[in-house]
Image (cartoon, rainbow, N blue to C red; front, side, top):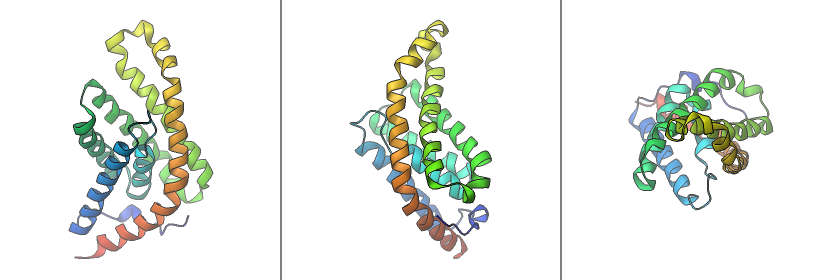
Length: 183
């Protein structure tokens, strides 16, 4: 996957680039809803990673937060919504500061493995956020009970990243660069 490496300077300030970002949020929400019947197997994490890699942490966090808020309007709000946003904030932060600067040199399969790791990281953060509800003494049991769901999340992330990244990264990179330069 070759990217033009101009995306780090692409502000989302034009109406076309804002519209493209809104479409990405809608696409991610739709992906979450379409796969809602399979626990934890959704393209959300992979799309958040792609947006973060292309546009940076600020836009990755905006994208992830909007996706969680909009999709939870349909799937249900609760204490977990804060944990979901925090989980994606951690993933976006790691991706923006550690992965994004080296992204051009990282093979697709390694990035897919990183997406799988993000599934486990997200699950761990959710368990930490739920700890006040069931008590810290039971954290280990709660976390271990959720590892099956985390494995589903990790597997889905791996496959979605392998499928979506080669298609969307070059396409979105070109679109954001083109749209950001038009007045």
